[in-house]
Image 1: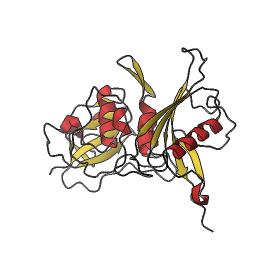
Image 2 (image 1 turned 30 degrees about the vertical axis):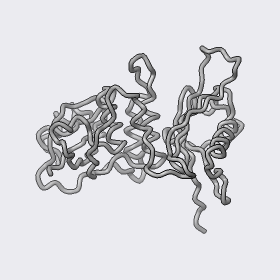
Image 3 (image 1 turned 90 degrees about the vertical axis):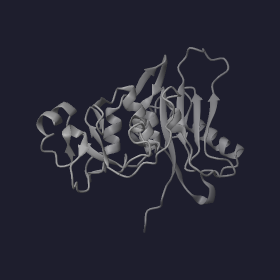
Length: 280
């Protein structure tokens, strides 16, 4: 099958022979979610019902119009204004982290809007995609994506990123649970902190808490959830776990810090990771 280009520019992306799409476009955001979730982009399903290999090309150093005007005719990887790959294309440049620069995943996240308003709801775009990328993962490699029906366009914009790994831990399948830890006497209009936490087991938990709640309360809530669902405690077996965010990259170690002071309001995506001891 013909390999199709998926090209990332500073201001948007170009998918095969589809026209350039800005990162702020709902269609672009939906396409990125589909790809990060391992689905073949729905934009290409009609022309390629059985799927096709995609090759990621990194052109984030230029805005699309600048690239098209100055480099499209001489681009070593792309032909036809970015519609196709050049014949006898050598290995394309995967979006991997340069030794002394941010990773491509971090550069992409930096260009995405933090939130968008959809159907009257404020949707956390950057956080949802950061959750799927993980704290240190690359963006997308130039590999074949499985051909499968993608989530419906009018579904919950975060639903596509909530799919669970195939197997469970502790007797239940990894999924997304919701926990609300709000004061019963609170003003309903007062702000909250909505946190999406992915455990090292693959389980996902969404917590709604008071902005002045402490990180220790968040950790305690996670430990209680583990106990309720027969999931091993974070410190089981003498291992050390940390609470981290992917964007910005940070480890939250001061458990006396409030969620608001830690920059986790109004919403944030966090990961529990197992610390690997340094080799001696």
